[in-house]
Image (cartoon, rainbow, N blue to C red; front, side, top):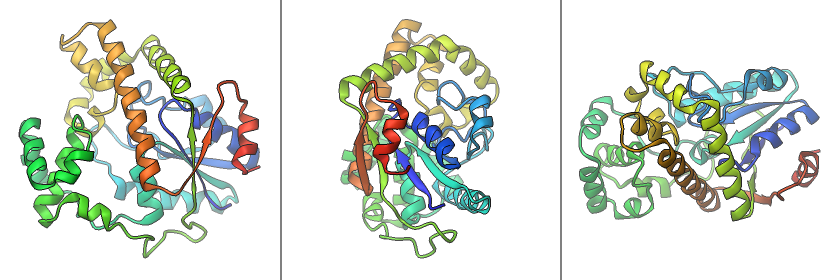
Length: 305
């Protein structure tokens, strides 16, 4: 019943593998995805459908409204509770997702970064992104070089930490503890993450196919409905790749064909950043999947069955 950790970039096929594993060993899946927590973000986050969730229990999906805040601290709290619940049924928790920060927060603790300050954050968010990046470049050049400069939420958080502590965000992340002092429920100990990868060409094809399928399934219509539910009020949710670009399309910034191509580009870039993060920050066992490899063959390679 010791937890298993499966990670990888978007579209690599980790959910399919995790579901097959759960069925094989009697497991339940804990989603490690910062966007699947939000109700309504379905198509664009490749959220498992109700039928799949009925066959294999999933946790930390659809737990927030679009207007609710959610962060790594909340993830750790809820994930710990989910592990206790799953193990009480003598099932195996299977962590599966691509949000590296959440994996690290759960396994290594939350580090030294302070909690959010709503007033300060509102002030920072009111400033143009160019101004925020200029300040970050001057005051924390290490973070500036590494951060996704199109991700306004992360830029704001880095400056928020700097303003609250007087220390660069990079210094706090560098001092992340090797282990958490209080490591959650019994039976949860730091373990290697099985990092699923594919060849660049294979992953690119899968990303392009996924994006095309999302638009066929109605990503534009879903986004239009979400705008009525407060999507633009939550900068975190609005950062989800696909939704942000579709909102811009609905505002007339580009046509649909250009939007689809841009979502593919942004998704490829995101997948590359995910892989880089796991290689730099996590204890991973890399497992490269082959284009036509069956799930059962992958499970044997994972060493979990």
